Length: 257
Image (cartoon, rainbow, N blue to C red; front, side):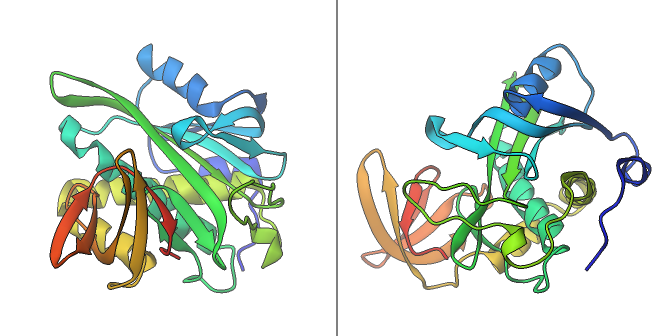
């Protein structure tokens, strides 16, 4: 298992163009990052809070971020059409899974649950919120907000949670941040040079097994079907009544582990 780096060592290990800003406490790393993005901050800023007091997830849910866990947001400015924005949510999930796996004895143990959860032993380990801005059909910026339970697994009313410390020594958040930034930068390069296929393969390697029965909740109700992968835009594909249907939004309420 890699030994955690000091902050100074971590800064030296960052990819070119990346900066890691560390705050003792913030209400929300993503709120601060988005303000800076709107003011013109260049790509490559990552903001890490040792403690976050008003973190948020999908659909307005709160995200508890006690000290010792990872609370970080990363600023991307890809040269890409706005329609490709969901690809960067996939990128964030794959990169975070790879970064956290480096600190676990089983590097394949982390699973991805569409659209934005990371599971370990069937319990929630981490989550992500991908937000951004577009202009004239092109992405202006993307803020990847990521939270992971490293030392503590806060209780969540509707699902089990876990943390890295339940399986191995809890890494320092700064060490995970550096590993995450390196993984994000590597996947940005691959996405730009190789297209979406390698990223989809990497996500699906950690996703549900093909043919798993999933139940998806959307505004229109519940749909159950066999998992048939993701399409090129990151949408979920479910086979129901002999035909494959595409879902761009929703929440899996069963299966997907």
